[in-house]
Image 1: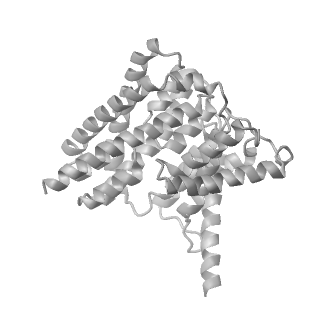
Image 2: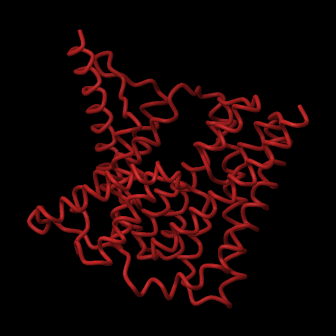
Image 3: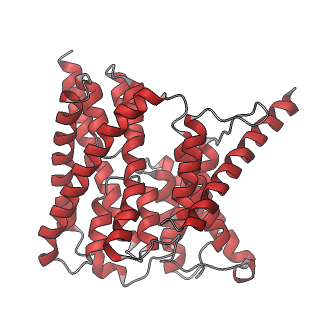
Length: 358
């Protein structure tokens, strides 16, 4: 019986990977930007929302498995670290202050939108409005009696729309397709990766994820491996990144994992949430552009780097976009982690005040 259950689980995982892989292939064929990530996300999301099953088996991608591939992406980002990055990071305090403004205005605008037009109660509207900290917002909202179903769906929709919209914005703006991971050093095959390199990559993923969780770092499963990988590359333990096929597979897993999170949501509520999310994300991206335009005269940082740094998507997904655009992923990831910290701090303060008025 136990063996049968394990076979079913493995088959469900294989089906998820297959669906994500077909989505990635289709997106590549028709020329979508970020095809591995976006194609896998769309295919997985459609299969999940439609209740697709094959021989009675539903696709399923366990979060722990997806997290391993998020760790690999962290190693990939850390591999782009070099001493020259310090010159850019020295300018980060100005955008960091702007992140506080961005989070505050986004939270206020989203809260008004969700209360007035979404009809959400106070707790649901506030924690759905948080432009970051997916897990934290759901956790805090649940403790205050928020509608977890609506809150979760609204947060997933925010991330999904951002990672879909931003590559298309760059496609329209520059006329160039955002690739899969063009901004990093990739190895086309296994020949370029020695046993020592594999060992360093694996150690960065495993120890980085464990250490990140132990230290309670924001986005720990990404940031922990990123830090170790940056150190390994800086001190010369390795000078290569994960092979190209592993990077592509990581994007398929991240995309498929995000699409699978829509399990259990119905079409009617999806339509309402998506409309609210479109308005919310549009407001935040317009605010993003305004802030970047105001900051540009004072910073020697390319527009695309700044724009991605404020885009209110998931840390992992926006980092992948930054990698594809050669847009300093360490700088971008640092600001996104700071966005999460500020959002969660504001959310925690608000949660205490809400709890005191109940």
